[in-house]
Amino acid sequence: MASRWERLFDSVGHFGRFQACVYFASAFQAISCGIHYLASVFMAVTPKFVCSVPGNVTNILFSNSSSSRIEDIWTLWTSTKNYIVVQLENGEIWELDQCSRSKREGSLYLAYEYSGNKSVFSCSDGYIYDHTKWKSTIVTEWDLVCHREWLAKLTQPTFMLGVLLGAVIFGDMADRVGRRYIMWFTSTGQFLFGIAVAFTFDYYSFVIIRFLLAMVSSGYLVVVFVYVTEYVGIKARTWASMHVHAFFAVGVMVVALVGFLVRTWWIYQIFLSVTTLPFVLCCWMLPETPFWLLSEGRYEEAQKVVNVMVRWNKVSTPCKISELCSIQQDDLVRCRTGDNDTSTAKKHSILDLFYNWHIARRTITVWLIWFTGSLGYYVFSLSSVNLGGNEYLNLFLIGAVELPAYVVACIGMDKLGRRNTLTPFLISSAVICALIMLIPQDFSILSVLANMAGKFAIGVAFGLIYLYTAELYPTVIRSLAVGSGSMMCRVGSIVAPFCVYLTSVWIFMPQMLVGIMAFLSGMLTLMLPETLGKPLTNTLAEAAELGTNKNSCLGKSPPAQTGAVLEKIEMHSQESHSTDE
Figure 1 (cartoon, helix red, strand yellow):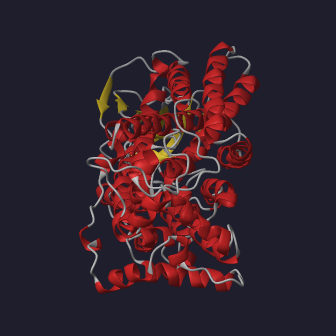
Figure 2 (cartoon, one colour):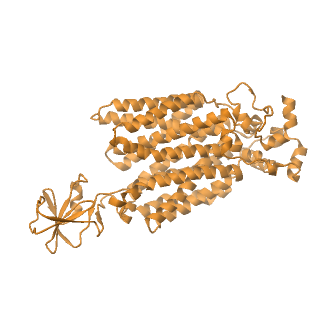
Figure 3 (cartoon, rainbow, N blue to C red):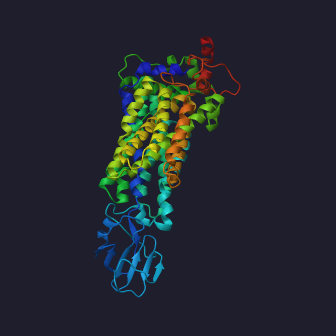
């Protein structure tokens, strides 16, 4: 049955004018996903800071330099172990550390070194921040330093937790209610929650709304991959699906640009969220995918969408769903009158990802690849932050380096196949991790090049797995499969910062962990079936037979099996399938 559905693209075109408009309209919103995922990079920056003092400062001393303005001292501040000596109008002399302050007893002479008695106080009067780079961040807004520093560090993990839940929830909902409605809801939610974040009144409301923003951003990103996959034919599916990642990478570069231009966090957030508005205004025009409509037995609605595709693509020969799917006219009448029991068809759940041993093994391998790709992606990215130089340019380049990676991935996927491209790049990223551990720390340029090469290799694998997952699973659980994979991806992104913290144990511990996971994933990938040039499957039985010789023609229905979950369409074409066999 899947091959008959794929023949739709032979009739209307694999990437005609209609598909191009739908593709660029829906993929544009992926820019906003990239923006919101990386927005906290600059929004949660912790600038240089020291305790504030209870009075007006007249003189400031830092090491051998003195000034009347603390802003002049920040350029000399090189370590968190440094402290500043200040003299107040009443003659009191204080030593200001980052998380405490000391009042010198009985001293009227302003000197940097002092060995006399001191009274230590907490930072009850707040903190003094360096506003040279950023006028305000959430850290300076709510004093997320010292004993509250852990709250700032939880900003990104809590966002990724929302991404994790959103991937599963909206992925499952898209299989149940349709791709289009979920895209409407999540894109509108991105705009509303994105603006709302800028007007939060405290840290906890900020985290809650960002959590909701993460859920809808993740939901959209999961569903849009399935959406474009089901609208584009085999001949263009690789490039179309892969370059959704390119729009995400553009979002990363937009964050760097807006961060460079806007240095107040809530204005920065508003500017980033406005990018969602154009899509929100036109997203209601996007149609449902014919694949999903056919899987639900809604043949008349699918025919209407196909008719629009025919007109836009200027196809002279009419395309009939009944001919493509070998469905008799009386079956279509029964669908309209409700004689068939399509309303009682089974609703699928995450348990269907473990339908049998073949599907279960495939799911475990796919989940491991998602986890490894995300872990490596963020470990390499966090390491790149320490490249030195302009941090905005660094982030821009981190996003830009993904663009050639996706081009290479597309060429490899079309020429070599999905599996034969994924395996070498996973293993090469493991090899690069090993090489990084052999490079002396003094060779900074070589270390940077190796780090970026690792990001490139893992980026190819990370981008490829979206399309590969969509092709490995049938229509009835495709969104759920991509959503659950994205869930494992977010687990990796949550673990990544803690993995980087292990540098305190051994400086190359993160690279070693990523290397081991990448090598293991690469080996397991060899057991996955190749999907290059294969039609999308529509039933779990068809998906289970991918890569086997049992059913070389996916157009034939598989033999009946106890407990098999078959699609509604098979109930309509059971007789014709028996004839084919």
